[in-house]
Image 1 (cartoon, helix red, strand yellow):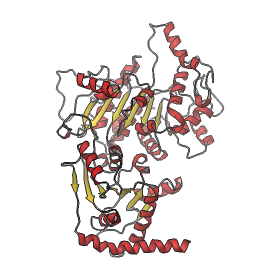
Image 2 (cartoon, one colour; image 1 turned 60 degrees about the vertical axis):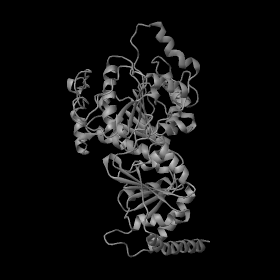
Image 3 (cartoon, rainbow, N blue to C red; image 1 turned 120 degrees about the vertical axis):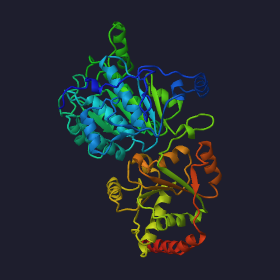
Length: 552
């Protein structure tokens, strides 16, 4: 384990005065210790909408901002910089440039036994949110001495949790930090053996954790709170909720209040094992108030360290009820936005997209959409793409037709590899989905056809194009879909096939979000090209019918 050099001058975020110049290419870091000034207009807007004032006026960061990873104001250690170098990371993206110094400053406050503020981050999908919390958490914990569960990262899907764990594993190389995964892919008994020392320790005695960082899904977290002896959150320092709007929008057995209550109950070190805890670790009212009662006995005592909540999402909720459930403490809201020149006329925030994303739309009849998809694969040469449909049934039927078409084509345009199409849906077993994803990452599958399952649950950097076979219903849905491509600075394209029935809704949605003029470009291939593909499409339909006939 590396020495406790976190207190060295090189690792402290440098505080700049208002008069001190900031180097070109890097915005001034937000001051974590000061309350943000809320304008009167923002305060009025917040009051009108019934939302907290901080949510109405975020600290904004231009999406195009980058900064050298070795900038002294990040205060990153040689270990972290070395791992960044191995990963080919020499520049930090906007969300990382904004959030890492904020969390590093919070670490300084925690060492002084001062309360730290919670952080909410809204940034486009694929903008680097994962490293924005992985790097500072590893930086803070890498000099720890005793293994305790100090960082909890909750994600909505098993696939996304696995990828976040891999990021932690990479940056923990060379340290003694241990990273655990709890998603239900293995039996509860095997997970328990990996997370705690079996048969020893209890919540009251400090637990018996084998891991410092746990990446998990909500349901599995509740399982361990209820059934794993020695599993405790009393040493927790970080609680990360990635894809926060989805975690808040779906019930997951009402996981949030249960975890909140477990943390509050276990915050009192004198509590006896299991005292006041009910099902899923939910404490009684007495257990919840015990800590605050003790604090009142000695009001001059320094505040006990608290769990810092970190929320990350591409579309952070503005629902007052959901925000209130989080019980955030003096939250700092950081939003990665479009360049100022692209902002809406009324100055309101809007969805941000990668600068390297090219967006197109096509007007076509519903029965011509398969021809357009064929055109993208045949003429435009789209490979390593993902096609989103409105339902599992549509994805299944379309995948069958496209597979029959691709299998029958023998004369692909010169220089272009043959197309391999696969269906990817929640109807498939977990093992089959994993196999398909491995093939896709390896370039053995040209196009995945799916519903919105992977729009929120997968992190695949190599996707070159996204096709919206069916028009997204909401702008947030469009954002999450097209955010699968143009990730980490790579080029990417998004195509939306707009039927006549969806044309008005699509144009209205895009205009309302400042995403129509100068952003979307229309594509319109020659009619004879599409007509040339019609015969192939009909032959594919007939082949699918024959297959069904053989099965029946």
